[in-house]
Image (cartoon, rainbow, N blue to C red; front, side, top):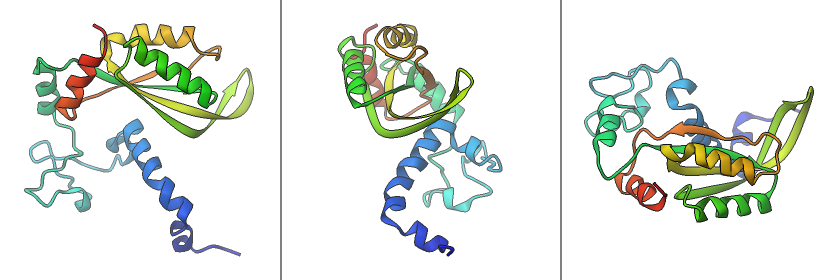
Length: 184
């Protein structure tokens, strides 16, 4: 018996998880990687092929990247180049312990713990599936090497995941807080 798409999309489970999954995908892959057919105008910042992405105020699209905004962030003396780092851990206890040690050592301003991640990967010639917790770490770009060494020294995996993505803009007060909450 085939389920209608509308009944599947209206289920409570899908409604609760889709925003988180969608946000995670946009953060991880970027809008331009998810929708390569999008063409963003460098002059207006508006999406030409998807009108729903246009703002109702002056056609400005807050999702579009602007060379001017990242240059403005770099020139801002109150902030420093910042990154988001992903680290997976085997369980809640390991995640809590590692997150707390990272913040205590001032290697990051904040660590979000996302439970219920299922990872599928190949390890030593076999496909593995594990339930894990994802740590989303906000820190200075200059602390990546020290953070990586801390994770490797305090993680039970033989080869722990440490993946960094640049922060190209955002709330300047939050970016200042990252700077002020981490060691130099």
